[in-house]
Length: 126
Image 1 (cartoon, one colour):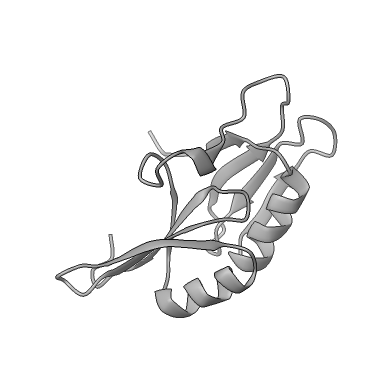
Image 2 (tube, rainbow, N blue to C red):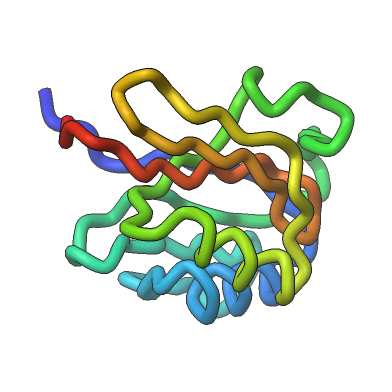
């Protein structure tokens, strides 16, 4: 099996998509213009990684109420400190950071709607 995508039911879908495209360099691979506005986002390598959609008749997780290690989106960063500063300047909030013994630098943020984002500047690629 090959992973296709991870789907999330969210509020503020237009604003979220714009923020993720603008500040995380994601690309819209496909977007539905009518409800539930299913939008597939690809990373900078062109691989679809997630779908955002809005179904108000279903539960929408309030990520701000959950610990960021319960769920988070992790992105490779070549310079996690610089990326942290840039994202915080555009509405993200800083949570914590970990400097691993191997030299890796992991920074946990939350997007402007509370969803946890992790910046992973690793010394060893997975």
